[in-house]
Length: 190
Image 1 (cartoon, rainbow, N blue to C red):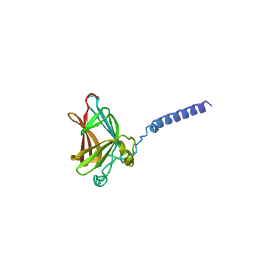
Image 2: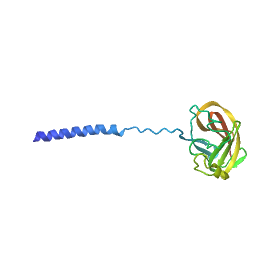
Image 3: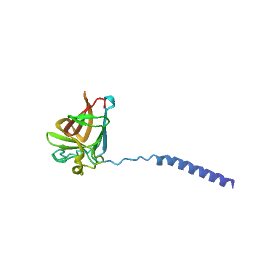
Image 4: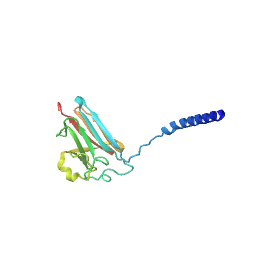
């Protein structure tokens, strides 16, 4: 009888050890994120006097396609990215090409042309694409013409980034070989 108890105790210990060894292997499963064709990206800029600009946008890829004049047609409203329309937040009042823009969050649309783009700031947030632009365009707070430049490099992914200037920053829209530099001047004391 004593031998049976020792045998079962031994067997129980072996099972406990085997189960314990196997548990960490199961717990260390690697979860892979789903790859998105157009991931959501964030660009921000922090300037003097706590001036802060943040842009949230969907980042489409070129994938060998002709972008401007084809995938993004000239003369048509564009969400300035992919999926949900791009949004920008200014924590203080700014001036862009002599247009005063109050602190707040705005949807950014654009109308690309070969030589210039019209950049549009709209107060209706959470817009998907530019599908409802026509019914919301009365909420535009600024429309600004910006010249097109040639980017130094070719950008596979649509990219928004900032460069500091003497009076504020430039918000750069970069895709393919196109560069749009939106000059942002921070108002003093606002």
